[in-house]
Image (spheres, rainbow, N blue to C red):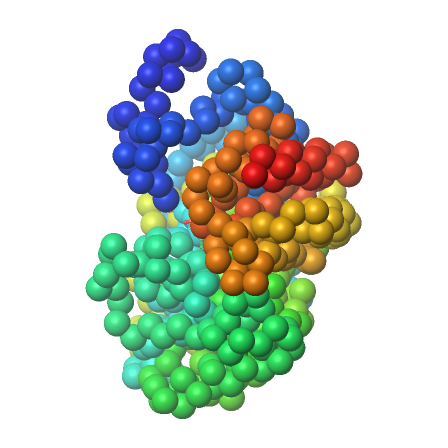
Length: 450
Ligand code: PMP
């Protein structure tokens, strides 16, 4: 490693960081993380914290998952790269395809299209949705629907369906034909409805109303996260996603489940769709598919959609999309090892148990601190605290205060993620009871600073 002083001096000088203001990074340089072990990370000063973020909702099996590391090393030796564009393939993607089809069989998903990450998966899924309708002779179905507060990555299609202005405004005009429906966000919504079930019904009615207004015959797909992650862990009522499924069926619209965060056990179920008892037409995955150790993703395709492409004789079913790194053999090797370990450890069960512990601890913090306006979670290891300066007006807490909370938690041994006025927690799914207690104690220390 380069000299510490050099690294600190050059921190955020020669590089720009994603999702950050370059000038801000120069003024408040990021932590330099140099090591990870188990569910903890260590910075350049040797300060170790329990990672309450789990990398970026992706390091589900922690930083010491030897089988995935070994698989990557072995594959680099044997075949470090070859393309799977038409004409060639590799043994790993075949094996992984079978494993994924089995893993997602209960979700009705039978085929995989490999990508290099979540944004790529969203791009491919939305493209396939349009193509599906074109093959079937409904070329007019081109529009996309999504939820406000939803997050679907940063490619232009994904940004167009994103429901947060921060990821859109500077890049407009985005794709035309994208429409956003109110999210079932109980704490804040345009209906002023705090009952989750009633709110779900209102949002579903808004969805159907917009479909009728736009004309069902113009709409290709609805994309949604089963639990909205980056938007602040917004957990819909159990009736919501099944309701969306029913409306999509009624109007011939494909349902894309964006499970870049929720697939592979994070919600306490193997997929977010399964959590709600819904079978999507297409599902995006990435992140935890390789435990975050290699950039990789897969769009899972339902039998119904696959059949339309595979039985096409017109040529319209030819896929004119793909990445140099689609089906990267090293990524596929990582994913195979990761999926085996995910199933061997049955991580969804620990996610459910530790998620309940985390949520209870966060609720206790809400009792203790007035600035905790809302606590969200309840399904596995994805939770959020929404911080406000006043509980009645729900005015979001200011940036400086939340930065102080982050710093206090960090110094007390807990890494948390700040997103707007939310503190987001999404630790590794192998986390222990003791480590959850450390996260909660760190957060308590952070909150006590203000
Ligand atoms: N969809 C969802 C639901 C996500 O949470 C994310 C990333 N947080 C993405 C898509 C984009 O994934 P990536 O950052 O790997 O491109």
